[in-house]
Amino acid sequence: MLDFPRWKRIWLWGITLLGVLLAVPSLTMLTGQRWPASLPDPQVNLGLDLAGGSHILLEADTAQVRDLRLQGMEEEVRRAMREATPAVDIGDISTANGRLSFMVEQETQVDAAREALLPLTEGVGLTGQRDWEIRVIDGQRFELTPTTAGLEQAVENAMDTATDVVRRRIDELGTREPTIIRQGDERIVVQVPGLDDPAKLKALLGQTAKLEFKLVDQTALPSDIAQGIAPPGSQIVPYAADSQQQGAIAVKRLGGIQGDQLTNAQQGYDQNGTPVVNITFNQEGGRKFAALTQANVGKPFAIILDGEVLSAPNINEPILGGQAQISGSFNVDSANALAISLRSGALPIDLKVVEERTVGPDLGADSINKGVLALLVGGVAVLVIMAVTYGRFGMYANFALLLNVLIILGIMALMGTTLTLPGIAGFVLTVGTAVDANVLINERIREERRRGRRVVQAVEVGYREAQRAIFDANITNVIAGVLLFLFGSGPIRGFAIVLIIGIVTSVFTAVTLTRMWVAGYLRKHRPSDLNI
Image 1: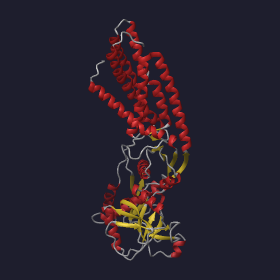
Image 2: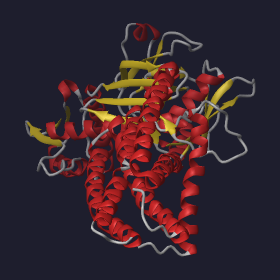
Image 3: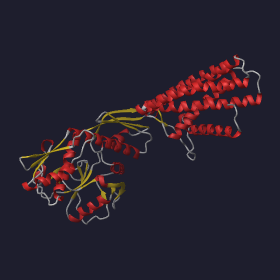
């Protein structure tokens, strides 16, 4: 138990010094000093309550899901009927009253139409239901109604996708350790520490970034458009408020190209030096864009973002390279923000900010100061009590405690974890409990000495027997910490991380390191008694 060969001592000191060195950049940052940019800087990220930043609660408009599903199903139905063998002739498709209906023109094709529709529906989890109910009315009219289970699944998928899109957009801002979690069925909580411009974040998250390219319906009369009347198969879309044109235009409702087939979007400049957004399609999108422009040379097509027309240029020649340019009344910042939104993907549903809280950096600094003060007061009290009670062995425990705090900070910096105010509470708790192991060990050594054991034998038995209780107690604490981390969120997880790391490092410092120091002391001085 007390045998520590040189290689083992070197190994233990190496691990200890590495942990201490990893903590130095974080200590420099917490004390307000500047760390040299030329040196590696693994640092603990400060949470919202320490660094300041923005807390935003987003709420989704889930009513959009039904409308979007109806629109998507309409296109799928037209494609399925067109690609059936032989093609199925159908009349106009209606989406009134939240259901999709159409008439099959030839009664002999009703069965073929049903066979073409069945692959468009799918089961919903383990409910035994389909996402669409198909009915035939009056022999030739089909009616497709979204089921409740299908709508609930669609909302769940849309919210999961929206959460991922929000996370990608925030990552593009270069912020560190944001907290992005679902709250209930329709809300997303976003916390971004250290953000200096919350208005920019709100604008970025509130933008759906649904990009569409649609052909302009040139048959529409300006007088009808002014009254909101669109030709059959078309829709009225207004120009953006900052567009060079005013009013609205009519565009073909179906067809066109969606922005979800983009692979890249970057802010750039046109030949006049005006900021634009350069976009690149994937292979499928590039093929569709080439076909659209080839078939409509000389005709205008509208670039639509979130239901507003940015511009409606003429197609002067086919665009075959899978690349295009979005122009509008952009400045560099707005063009870059649009590029970020397009790269991150469009939100499947609109999100609106329903709650916003801003934590100032001064409040965060005050939290850090009070937390550090609590840590120092608790730490000094523990150090004094241990030194007075156990003498040399108490000093070993104190030195191990100081190393423990530094190693915790170093490991957190290496892992890139976030330190929150509850995390500081975890530090304070660690200071108070980290010496428990040394108290158990020292008291057991005292007991063995009272029983008449020699010094070395008492120390060996004390460490060996105390370790059982130490490991049992710490294993149960680790289990509790893991459960807090798995089922908690935000600050609770921050507390759990510090707790788990602190338990592991305290066993290392309080048991392994102190045993190495005690063994060295006994080997060098060979005392006949212990002042413990």
